[in-house]
Image (tube, rainbow, N blue to C red; front, side):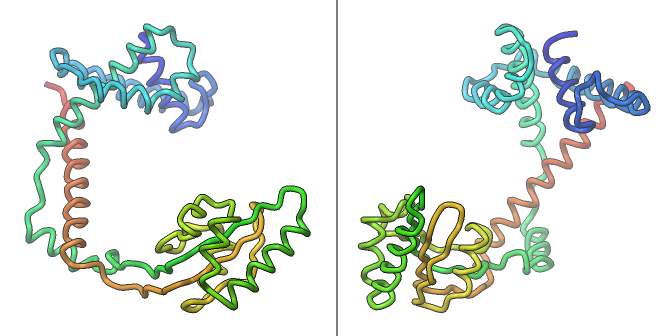
Length: 261
């Protein structure tokens, strides 16, 4: 069995059966064998179409990077490793060629899809946020007292926030005076998100403790949810529909490869 076959067979087993090929339960072995035979047939057919193609160095490097972790887990010689990378680079080359021929959605199709899915193009609520972090390390009580003093200073004078953050914060945002920019839900630790989205405009949080240490958050402004600009939404809708078209085109092409000639 060639190196690319051993690699692909193992990846199939891990992806769909969550175990090494030799550990697949006996009851599942026929299903695995059918899936592997189909995948092997497809990969052989696809690669055969790229025999004379020149693989760009940047694609070869990108494929090597994407497969590095999985290749490191397998006992391949340097030559076998390069053979696996070359095989997958040829697969990627042909898939890209097929995708480039997929139908591009027309303006009417894009507009119709956008009108049916406008709720997906809402800009979420965002808050212009500044952040100050003091990590605790050993002196937990001292840090708690320090963050309380900072809170009192900032509560009385918001201009103290960037000065204190730049000097004392352990967050990378200290380089910007603590400014994180516009923050949506889902970007911060749960404790920080809960504190931030409970604030009103120009309000500073009480000290918040997380596993990292003690935090202060300043909600400078609030931007309410709003529909994305129509031109931007249509552009995103077009990108989405074209990706769908490419995937469908590739699936149909792969299915055709399996049809008897």
